[in-house]
Amino acid sequence: MGQKIKRLHMNENTTDALKELLYKMADDLLIIGHRNSEWTGLGPILEEDIAFSSMAQDKIGQAQALYTLLHEFGEQEPDIVAFMRNASQFHNAQLLELPNGDYDFSLIRHFLYDHADQLRFEMLAHSSYEPLAKVARKVKGELKYHVFHANTWVVKLGAANDESHFKMQTVLNEAWNFALGMFEEGPFEDLLREEGIFEGEKILQEKWLKNITPILLKAGLCLPDEYTWKPINGGRKCEHSPYLTPLVEEMSEVFRYDPTAQW
Amino acid sequence: MIKSLDPRVIRAAIEDSNPIEPLKEMDQWETYEVFHQKKRGDQHMHVGIVHAPNTEMALLFGKEQFGRRGISVNIWVVKTRDVFTTDYEDSDIFETIPEKQYREAGGYKVMDKINKFKKGLGPKD
Image (cartoon, rainbow over all chains, first blue to last red; front, side):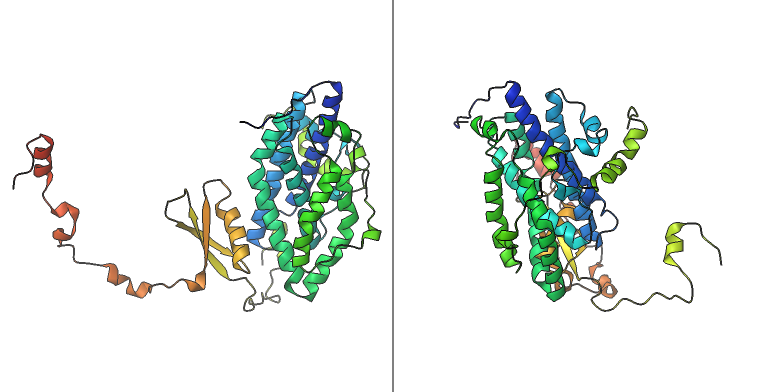
């Protein structure tokens, strides 16, 4: 009420731009959701196992909400889109498909990704594309908890003792250039901004750096030196590491066995 | 000895020659009692226990173990060792002689008065 929202002009261009945005967001969520769910039953302690698994389910739910929006643009049903594509049709950033490694890597990835995810949805809460703005407002609470969870672990382990500090710093360094790949620009940046849909990857990355820096400082962790920053891009253009194919195959194995089965 | 085909049993290599080491002290994190509040203004109710290394993590876990179904607005955690308790050996302190109707609401005969009042006659002194 009261706030004047820019009216979105739907045409072929804006539809393409929205699809690109929705696909990369949804695929990020689905892939990280699947990876994190691989910890179910193997988490470091029972309580954390449950918390991490529950958040993984949140991610899948968020992905489903976005695939549903894509369906409204004429894409296939959410389940078909999620389970019937090959790795070469996924738009997720490569960071999210990397194997879980030890818990330290999974935690730092959770930290780096969830901060970006929270900020992206925050920016989209006032998008001129109202259906997405609505989803963004709906997931606010989930994301707040996910980031709270990530921050708590990173601060605790970053500063607990020499061994934990060393492990966390090592995985931060390893994940860093992959994390920068989350902000790979697409072909529709200007259009999305002009239409009031999304302010763009550059601004998102700036906000992200501003948010994670004080937390890492509190954890006693250092950002890698800026001259070493080399974003590992490609994910948005469906270029992936060898790790995505086995993930997609395992994730969709049951569904593909009989796509018409009723659950 | 029965040879199990269950992979979990095989993996565990349960044999007499392989006894399970007892847990060291603090091998587990200490426990926190979790209380949740269903809506603002309600009393907090005890819902369970979590292991955690500090209060912040206890809140983190408490939320996810007991609040993830969206029925809470608030959570308290308290270190289990900060909870003081009576001894079960002393549970007889809760026993009491039942012949004390004057201590119970049912012991007062007031329905006649109430019914009269409702009929508009008012209470009689």
